[in-house]
Length: 577
Ligand SMILES: [Zn+2]
Image (cartoon, rainbow, N blue to C red; front, side, top):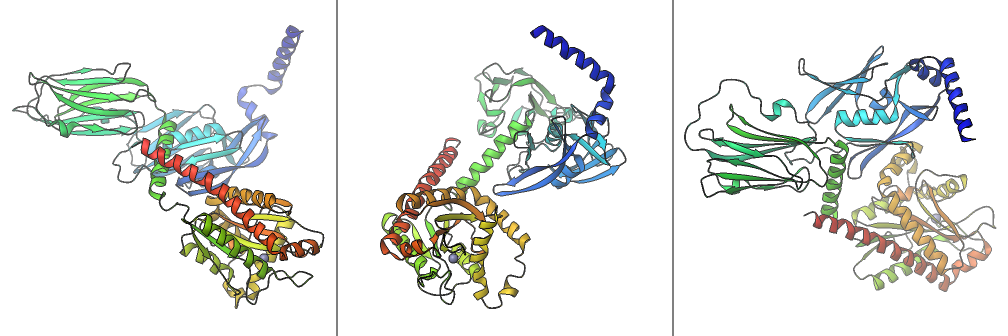
């Protein structure tokens, strides 16, 4: 049975080949039936500094292609098309390089912009295809191409149908160029007249150039050339260079490295006037491909170059992790969960929603927020509670976020009561800022946003706050989305456990009050004031206290997991030194 089906497949294959013809036209045929789509490109330029843009893509026979010009634009690279030739320019790593790609060619060239500077050619696993006026390349190959060229981690995630580009710059002031490649001229070749060196050999300084595919170590010397013997790295990652007769201060030659191929360089003066340099390598993550030693006569340097397997992605992953850890360490104090901002919705001339029994939203939420504040003060003496309003007064929406930012809040909780024309609607909801996913969420956001109409000159003040502005703001809040979501989930759960209010889920919508705070933010709709039953409930002190307790229990859950994460990150920093 099995044999038969194999044969059958074989025959089908032959027939297909006959129909389709040469592999070169295979792409053309399959692309004609291609479906255009969008591929998200998520670029990370730094800690909490990222953006997502759509890249034109198409899928044909299960293979995803990207429009190379569109992808270049998403990576903020300028590009120029000349027929079937595409040139993309990249200003990075301290130089300008041009990548040229041609339809049907499996080779991409990386050229330094200045003429005669040489070219690096890489082979692609597939060639760019010209289709409907654009140059397309398989997404996986395009990611690899930009990765190699820019020396940044660019990864195509097939499952998520997304490209992640980690465009971190090397750490400023690190003095290392981790992005270059060991080239011949880096290693030892020097031209020009060779000076005559006389006198005792003194090793004066150490210069290390760490690169993506290895490291170049220069021992700068004065005096006559001395014989030196180099012992290549062994399996444990130990190499050595021994100068027959040399002097030098071991302190000038000692260096340790927290990451990368090199672990340590240490000079050991030997009794017979010789000096041994021990070079310890990180053989855990790097595989040494080759190593060489040479005296550079023009600069009187003893040069050891060690080349490892190029794993640019691994290098950048490590670099990215390092940057994140550094940022976290720096921000650890800043991120301490020490201030919580409580925002009672509406107030003053703005009553908010009004129940059939005359209950005012502004009164209910003020009591709940005061209860919540009292619980926080009692249970968390180390946390400062900031109220946007603690009495019945009108505060403009934007002002609320500003109060939160000014006080360096770590979480912004806005409390409201919901209302709907449909009197049977009931239950609690927790919202975070984001584009609304359904009409119901939009309706609630519009209801709460209507508070701006109470503000003087609101049309003038909120002029720019269009849909577009909303998207911008939610992008800014994006950095906190995960945290906001998590907090919202816990708070809803806490309220469900503590009250009879049926949780209606965590939702997102464009709440203006959540636009301004630069911190994880959420908006609680503590039941429907428009529902007779819930209106009565919401008026009861015991229920108000339970809602506050429920919110607090959620915040407690959130704080626990938040601080656990902080501890993990900070201990990560410490263990790495
Ligand atoms: Zn409200």
